[in-house]
Amino acid sequence: MRTEALSALARMRSSAVTDLAVRALGSKDYQLVRAAAIALQGSRQSDVIVGPLAAALKRMTAEGKDTSRDPRLAILARLKELAPADASGASPLATYVDDLRSYLADFDPTVASAAADVIGIVKGTRPDPNPTRRPPEQPTQDELRSLPSLAEISFDDGGVICIGLDAADAPVAAARFVKLAGAHYYDNLTFHRVVPLFVIQGGSPGANEYTGAARYLRDELGLARHTRGAVGLSTRGRDTGDGQIFFDLIDQPRLNYDYTVFARIVTPAQRAECGRGYEVMDGVLDGAKMLSITFVR
Image (cartoon, rainbow, N blue to C red):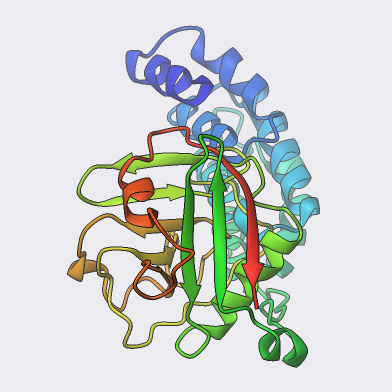
């Protein structure tokens, strides 16, 4: 709600938007921080907004989460707008250059490159980014060997969906799902996106597109198809799976080979204990809550 209100005020060019956006930059909600940075687009009040933008960037960077990419890039886009010299002949970011240089070695190459762009405007010469490469999260051999075959997702209305995990085509994604569920990551999270004849999507602590598990997961794009009942990893670009999942409500051929499929709904014909999985999926409404996920080995 705060995100939508802030975005609406920005579109209206309300005089209140700067103060509200600056306050929102202090939020822990990545979607709200991103919206706040975007709402400040075109603002020339550098004395008011540069400090809060820099502070939010520093705070989120210290958290070390891959999922901070989008809000951090939005902040750097605002800083880039403010980087040119003003009427005094100096850049409003002149005193922040040393801080900006620290992002040249950021763990996210896209953020490191964006920081180099900002410094290039302030100093007249763009430095070369040298990001700190860190390996993606990978399951251990024991985790891969002990993958369960079935997961039961229980909802707050009593519904249950059984899904069979695809350890052959998407073992890394299946293992990540099992690890997160075993740590109770999904407990009490909701399906925040319901698009009829398309997908239902959930698994975000912030119930939005921009908040998920801390680390991204690499795509596993095999031959699996997005047919009705397939379970995929939600992403916002290549290799950006953050723990959020979605169910295909009907066949979605346009998603084939772009989004990892790691599981499918299991029918009673395949397993007697699994009953109304498709009916439960079709009945999911915005805000439906997952109570727990249990596994059958």
